[in-house]
Image (cartoon, rainbow, N blue to C red):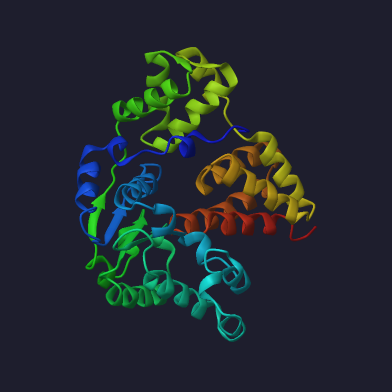
Length: 336
């Protein structure tokens, strides 16, 4: 997609969150900085809901909200952490030279929590994809939460709350974000299509909502793809578009580059799929297997599935999409 993504352009306010019980629970959390564990399936709208909470709670959310995607943050190198513009103000040149990566990450967490709010009484720190936090870092996080509970609200977002250590879970109120129903998804799509001045009919909206299977993010991207390709979201337009949605050319190019040992090019295509196209790691892996079954035969297909099985296990555990699929690509090009 060349146009801005609708999931970003039409991020919901607190009042626009489709699940009523989530709206009510988050409104209660704006009165004082209570810590939260927000959990639910992929695509249910967890991150969007938390951003809506911050917009509602802070007069200046750009400064009083610190958002860390754990998959990316804990996957950074020491150099990347120290040079990231979000954290550079916290890290002196001496600390950069003398600290390990683990020390830098712990330092960033402590400094982010202790930094005075710009416009209100407290900061909000969001840790997204928190199932990827190692237990030793969770212990460090627990101590930071205890020390700065009066001026910092921690919002921990995860698909797997069982991955969090009990001392963290006990310090947070749970907010369950269930998958939205087709009717709730349809309401979101109608609002977006009207705002974008895209023609649609009820059958088209219902088709896209059903196609998404409870994944709000997938529904919005599907509606945008249909609108860009067909100029409208009707039953016929959505059926023709979404039955053919895929990334065959990109996947083919990525596999070819990986096989040739052109790992930088393969990783660049992977980044395009994850960032520009908004695909999840699981979606990229599914497409990669589909294209791979047509591209390879015999033992090569078996080897690809074996690699994919290992990667899928790590993705389910909450590890970085980019790192894990990148590992598969590196294995494909190992003998190049």
